[in-house]
Length: 541
Image (cartoon, rainbow, N blue to C red; front, side, top):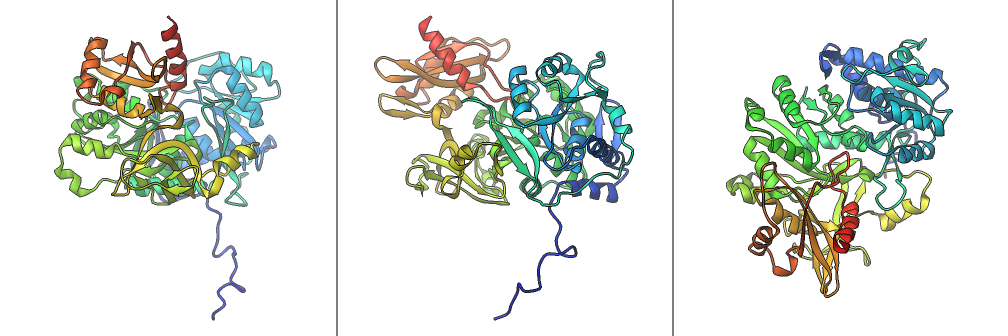
């Protein structure tokens, strides 16, 4: 028997720690003059971007930051945010991209919990930074004056461009000593308590980035519109994956449908990613705004189970939408609804229904299945038996910062427990039916809120909707539907009731309808925890 291990260990010639930093270095080496960033009139090449990232790293290191130091970023999707995704880890530090729509109290909690030493803050957040500094006076603030942002008075310790140029040695940057070193810290939404800090590694960031390139079949030099906030799971690792393919980032301070369509048309955008509400905004934009886009635009959709009606509308626009699924704890998308050629022979409605499923594991994910959480046995692939969606492999976080108990619970029995409930079909594809806390139990019958929402979304007057449980003296719980109508559309509760009765079983039909704007997170997710509170208010009124 041959000895394949003795004297055959790792050495410089045969091993290098995996890190997304290398994507940047290669882009600079091979395509230095290719456009890396577009932002208004700004054009920045990969050579310029790499140099700026080195300067950011050097400036941070000269302040004494290094391995495991935390650098927070309170930035929209601007060039500085792209640079932070490389410059911060090149300093050996960990990037904590902050949700720019969080309240100041939560921002302060995250900065304290993550032990941030430096904060990169856009001028738009001058008021928030003032409050943060009162609570955290030792926090070193770098003010970023974006070319498309507001002009404000100076705040913090130094302006971003001055900070970069002050670095005395731009070559003062490092690669990770260990690919398991942390590269990013992202916080969960905190809807059931304090937000948890999810830690990403260099190794898994590379694997997740490459996995998405494989799943999405991304060619060389994609043009990527930054519709997805880079604070959300590091934009599903796209800042790293698009760099690996030497693409172009079309930056976007905030989502506005007509502006996005203009940018898609002007710059021949090939790829973008977003939650369903963003896709809905594009689909519902005026016809004139959508005119003239004649090239293929590839989009990924995730963040909530997309209604089949939305996927149908996007396909009619000529956009090719890929449904993916994941969570902060798995670097964003970890599954994909792979399309089959045979589906092309089906009607658009049938294709949309198939594409609405969460699908199968991504290329570099080791496991994705549905299990009975009590017995840890897989449910039958019958499309009916519900269980919990579970994932394992290289897409999974290192764990929760300073929370070993939550980490152990999330990783129990060798799987990451998502908390989402779903079914597996005979073809092996998986579909979410609900979050465990969103299942409505009415008279002993389980009602999937997603199933009811999917019916409501198909009504021509409905723009957005959400269904939650409402207390009921007779049935225990009944469905309550919150509905946001399309502009200029009108429909009554009785009309919606009749419509639902024609589509689903009577016990699943909402017993209450509320017409108002739905609360949403900055990434477009409908905040059902707020609607559950609102449901109690409606019943008491």
